Length: 552
Picture 1 (tube, rainbow, N blue to C red):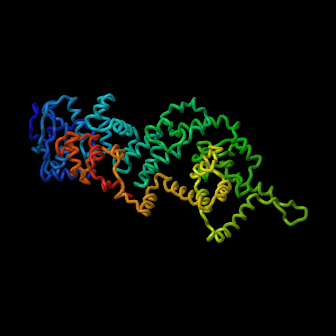
Picture 2 (spheres, helix red, strand yellow):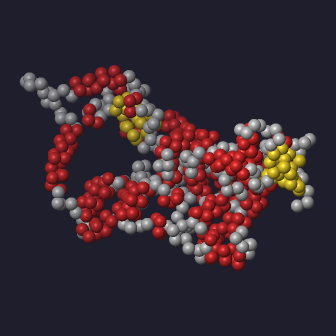
Picture 3 (cartoon, rainbow, N blue to C red):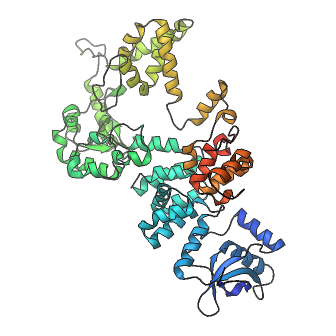
């Protein structure tokens, strides 16, 4: 190339480009590079350009430069130490372009460095340069946009991603959230579980924690909920939330504040006040079990008149308005104990003396002793009596997530969405007991399959069942377009290398005759072309199963 010369350049004349998105030069692969340079020297020259005075700026090859520095510093110092280099006259703009694009084609780039490389390029060139960047790297613009998007997450989260404690899928789910406290909470959970907290489980937990917008007591239009980016309806197309029904709020802090303001201003008018007679509320999670004492229950302790006039007499609510505890005291526990004794005294029974008041039995006695009888008798009597009907009833009784499915099959519709669709046990039994045993068996099988597929994060359970019935990941799993879409160019090449995909005749023929590339030049392919080789060339993908698919 004209204006380019080859030189052995002294290390002390070189300086890195401050705009280089690659900032990390350490780890096992870097140590291997240092060892290689110490033994064989730098084989591939770096690319540099002249800058002020006698200095040369590195355009490509900073890892080789830094590894050479390490070798020189442990071998007597920089004086006289040189590195092979191509010296080329380049403008600031051309140098920046070459540096970014060259780095983004590197196979040893971490996912975080790749994302930072995209961001560096777009920050300097502007968002209008996205199509050009996609063209030059062979990477889908949507992929680039989404990778840049996760860089707004907290530093702790990004650091955990770089260390391999989080997957990119985790970041996409976390980026749905705006509250940094919530993001840090989930990040801590993922790190704590060390690989056992899957992307599916995170998605499910975020969805579960997000209250439905229809449960809001406040005016949603005034709060701007319909157009908010934290509205799951707005997010559905971006994050494939096909399994999330209804509009949910992902900004718990905002939802909680609005819910709190409305309830505080309107408590005396609410149904909660009418039903429980309490003087206020707290949200579940803001008070621990040790912070309050509950009325009623097995203690048969009812609030006294002075309790009902006390500000500490409250209701504990879930964020979506569901009642967790109807009547509790968050005040002085000694006061609560004294009131409880007073309540017991007012219910005192017959002392054996003539004329004494006959005690009214506590409401819980009947249920308690009836259950004691069932605990003793039922297990023995059910031995040998269990049928598909009883199995189906037991499964439905223990798993309320199946109630909507079961109810719709039998023409039952939800009457109250506050708790979700939930059927009473006697209602379930009325349906099940009237079924033929063979029909109950069919529904039991269907329900069992739904339970197996229920929790997205229970991958180990599903794998155990798959192994049990003879499903083999190693033999039956196949690479799909969706899978390749989520991989970088370097990751696709790694798969091809590990399984010798590009050594197959079908791949070589497709590369040369269909893609019109030079023979064996798979490295020149853009991402879309690599995908076509995998999916259209006719290569045998049986057994091409990356370790991440097989890993527990």
